Image: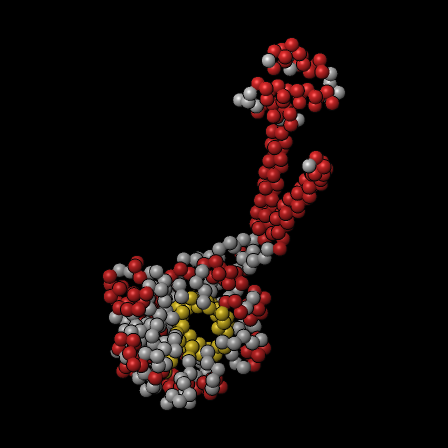
Length: 408
């Protein structure tokens, strides 16, 4: 046991050195870490591009049932510059707005047509679709925990929503002169409009009165034919290609998920006059990052939140960032040094005791015999260290006569 203790004591200084070196390495790493932190918003504020346009993705689905007239009206109240909708086509050739393949999630088809509830939405005719309620599910499920904050009037409007047609959306957009992003879904193969769905949809768009320059056309099928019929459309791709390929194809815009491009690609598209719209952007911090990166537009389910972001969060010049970084390092270093100095000062006032002295001072309530035994151990320990027995007896305030009397 004594051998083990001696080995531990010999290794203790090495262990302390290792701990100190490890601590200093971590501290140094934290100090230089800001060198490797990059952010689009660390830039010269004078070079910041205009605020990205905000499109209402399916309206404002956080505040109203998605792809309904009430949802698009709420989006207009948030001053959006465009509306994005998912378009399907009914079995009788009416383009309508629906994101899912079936009607079960966003309508009461289980109650109205229980024997057809699993059928694709495109297999319903427009008359059947108008019998469905498209708002009660939102109040019942409260998908974004916002239904409880609605007024009674808003709840009444929500509960009365029906499936919205593309014609109704385009009429609203024409009245307010705003852009519409059309995302089409081809009907099933044996659908009566499987081969003419583009023509049916295009005819509705052209008859709506909406300016062609306000329509973002995203469908690749028959794109060349669409260009001839409606040369004013903003041809937009859902697939990322190089700017050269897009320009040669006559495509002026991209609609991509926000994580499909990085800051360098955003700059490249912008320099080549390719309009880039990213979805689905709901958080202020993400909107700020894309704003600093130079994105021209975003599609959002929460335009009511993004409208509260008048400028990018964390926007600062590189000089300001460096000043904050250096100041934080200096302050933290001063705190660390202060802690070490304080600890050194506290330790300097503490005497070092050998184990026998610690045991003797802790034995206040032990018996007299135990105390005498500890005193003798202490004396013998000091004798081994060079002190005389007489000096120690005098120092401890007892002699052999007293010791004998206590033992009796």
